[in-house]
Length: 449
Image 1 (tube, rainbow, N blue to C red):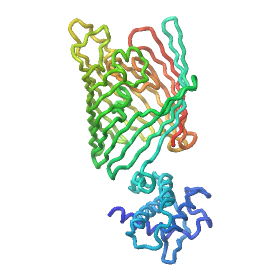
Image 2: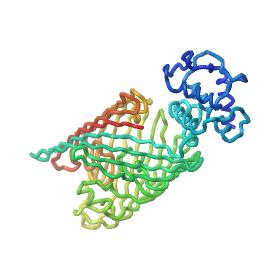
Image 3: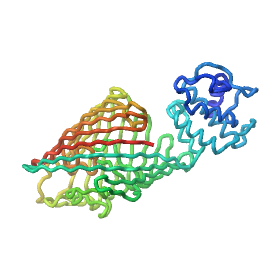
Image 4: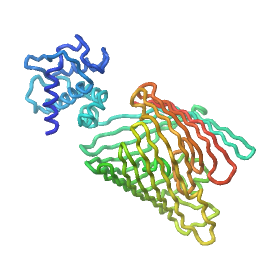
């Protein structure tokens, strides 16, 4: 019903706004002369996907906005479905099915935001072309780490790159199959890995529920304070308005590339048995107001090993968290998060110091950088982070790292569409009283496709 109403409304607009030839004038106020969309829509008309008045013409010379162009694309999508299925009863029928499918797919990508505002699910356009949609990125990352430990100074540099593919295939109206595949290397030693499977999961999206099953991203509401990794298992999310609740059950290991000797000795890596884990997160988030949330995580296996100075009374490790923030606008946000790790120790073991069992962070964000989807996007931020040994398991570590505390500043900018520049500076120390200072310079070029 909704689709038929959309077709009727957009059809009325279409019949009064298009001319026989797109070359005669520039009817698209937001589309420059010579843009490929002119020829694409004209070709769809010639192929019978879009029809005008009874005499086959498109009348009217007034200007057409990007929003109105999206309405025409929505109508073309509807008519394409009907004519291919033989339901429209209109002549001529579609002449070049394969080419027109690809053309509609490309037009929908170009006018994605306008179609979304019309309520048209652009993801549904997968049925017009291939069953698999390929997205991805290329990252070039430079990191310079500087450590001052007593009177000793150390410096290491890395020049790494990643080529990432993220295929998504439609299963039916609610379910998709998803994956992440990486090829990485380091310019320093001219290395390159084979293709690595990072994630693979099935996802079901319904009105209020989302279901994931497989190996998927584990990045809960504390924004990387506790986890920025993957988990194998299942996830169920219920969302109603600004409120959501998410439950996860599965198994988890540290990244196999983890080289931190102390963390591997405590938590293990992929050479060790994976941990059983389950968690629940509650979150309230208003786009122009407050955000509040809480989380609970429980481990039940050898992933958690207390440092040799301590003796564990059980193999259970619990983490509790809270987070809060305020959105002043779509370009200004202040937020923070706190977590506490609870360890059951045997009699005679020393008490865990507070710096080891507590983690917290606070950050001020200004700007709207979001994967460089538009030219000119930018963001600057400042943050303070304290990542305790037992309250942060696999946190985000582009700046302040696990077991450190300190300041982090960063900026992102998109000089061109789908191309982003990211820079960060970190000045931190070890969370304990050990005399160690860290400085990090982080630079990245991101190219999205």
